[in-house]
Amino acid sequence: MARDNYTVFPEGVSPDDHFDSYFMVLHEGVRAIFFGIDMEYIIWCDESISKGEHFSNFYGGAIAESRHAAEIIDALREKKLELNLFGEVKWVKVTGNYLEKYKNLISLFFEYLRCRKIKIRIMFRQNRFKAIDLSKDQIDNQFYLLYYQFIKHSFGLLWAENHTERTSLRINFDKLPDKEEKSRRFKDYIYRVNSFINSKNIYLKRNNISEVVSHDHDILQCLDIILGAMAFKLNKLDRVVSEATGKKGKKTIAKEKLYSHINSEIQNLYPGYTFNVGISTGKREGERSSWVMPYMHWKFIPKNHLLVHDANECIENKLPRLPT
Image (tube, rainbow, N blue to C red; front, side, top):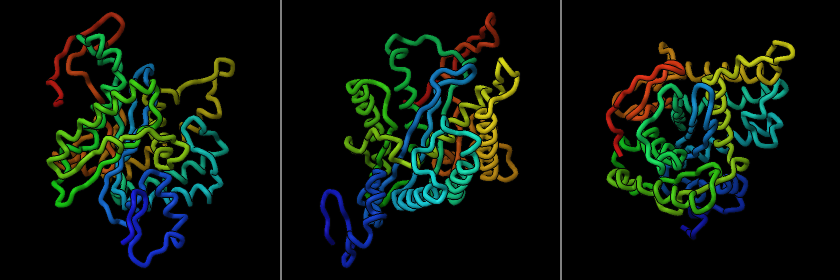
């Protein structure tokens, strides 16, 4: 078997024979694992509205084994070509003209959730639960502290099975919003997840924590659409009307229809169960649900908070401390 830092090809397999598929996998950050030689989990992460009227701090992620990621990447690429979607698909680009194409693409993506080849996690914070007793450092670094909690808890890494063979973890963040030094410190902090995944024989290398451009990652683009749809619905942006006409704009109507389509796909994942997008998803499959269930939401509630009912009323609550 020929092997170097970038390529792995079984004996008798020519790189030229598989150039197109291999190149796309390399392009998406899956690299040498296309042929199933190495075991690796890949997480793609994105964030959306940091301050909404009702809900804020939206984070989204997708996790897949490398062998499934390669299949999904190829399928999404082919579907986009079939639909003449040659550029980046994003929630902010949803219009009536592209609605059916976006619905078609998202339905394909959810097929892979149904067979559990990829899992989606969404985290958000409801504004009425207002954090208290925060230090200046916690306030200044709120974005990254919440992002860390999302990575640590949402994907169920604490509940992963023990792997018999050494397994890698790769995390691809959509381009982070801060300067390089602050982003570097955040990645150093993310590296700490090794403290609890190494016991599962899963390892995160420092150079496997990356910032990527969503334009080059179709999985990240589908995640952006789902995350944007949730932020749209939970902040009641589907009710916004024009001051001039008193009616909803065409883009709002298109986004409302796309959200409804996404919601129906989520509901179909759990027959006989009404999925409530505004609360934390119930653990329908026991304590390991966050590791095995295909789609889950987490409404993050600070351990110490004021419950704000209206502008003049607050009730103080203290929740158990989150594991660190």
